[in-house]
Length: 113
Length: 114
Image (cartoon, rainbow over all chains, first blue to last red; front, side, top):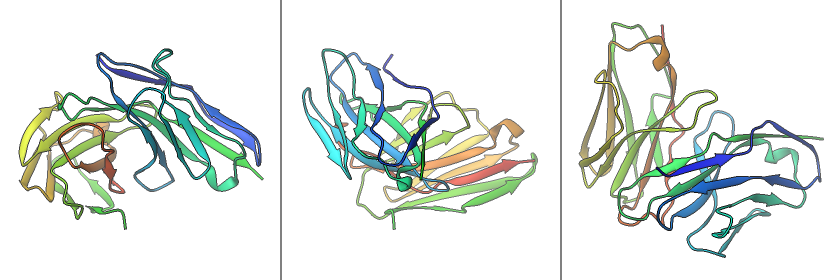
């Protein structure tokens, strides 16, 4: 079945460092791909998305490119801030109409001042 | 304001209690979901409703009983739960149709079973 694999955390960085969180997926069709962020005590919020190969999603300085050839959707940010500390989830959706959204295990990011 | 509101935010219940979680969405969406979030595990899809019809029951124990009276409201009725059911329960909604649209989540109900 469809699945999402994320790098293990936690990831600890200093402020202004470069961030990469790896995400790879397995899917039988052509899913849409998403990154969500979860701050303490809250639900998941959409960070960015891409719906087809080579699409680049971007938001708040974060970017991710849908790579069909490597089945990847890595999250990057050039300069992280303390306020970016949160848990990040990679997800895919089955576009065949079954309403299934598959999530990775989440990667905790801690940014130190 | 997330557009998806869950109540209560926190719930402590004994194993013999009966309680219900409530979710309401103000986004005009047609599909609603229950997810379970436990520490160090992927989000577990529990139930999906599309236009009030249940389209997914992901092998959830019968002590969890969903109810979707209309496209805006979703309930999760709980009875005779086990301590391992303690988790964050997240409600989400989506427009329905294709999977190109993202899910919109509520802030969750933190459930503790004693």
